[in-house]
Image (cartoon, rainbow, N blue to C red):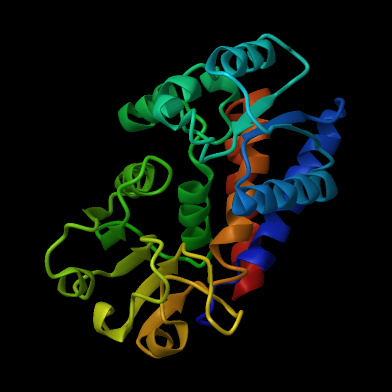
Length: 298
């Protein structure tokens, strides 16, 4: 089996299965609203990429609502109107918010109805995830677990080190690994002897947003390495948090800086939107898609 985990190929297979499910349902296209505030170049690029991919692969209607600036009260009113609009299936709030709204990020997020919270970032969504209730799981963690399953990784008892403690990646990813009976350690900027901690892990998830910080000293022979970071180096080349070439030989599986975790994140957004509409039967669609993808990546 190829060491490089191909999130682009896997996501295309998963999209096919979801698209077939939606065609059987025969309803109108699902609708998403993507809200952004201020001028964050990276966020705008990601928003455009999501819109193009979801429209192309599953026929969703994605409406971008961008505000150069907006008051707290007006943004909350915008979110509440979306919550009450039965034609809209999901809402995304692009982070980071503008400087004026940053201090209110949690309060603003929590105005999103968790049943439409396709990014899985509200306190209700995260709380439901922790206690094992039905929820829409954050897309990057869900994509990572799905990719590992496609590549046949048995997570039971695996020692996992996650270098990230955010509400978007680290904390929900830990919960998803625990659900699969893995043993987890969360590390962060204050962790002592980080390379030693990582070098004991069966699976290392690098999401510290530090360009090529993880080299071969962080990875034991045969470990699986998941790289969530995306950067442009001084030569204009896209790299991750992991020194890919340095780590490649020691790893048994590894995600590249492009075509790895990123495509899976957007694909899981498509599945979350469908789940917001159709509920748990979408989980069955995903399980079926994973089994199909397993055959094709071998």
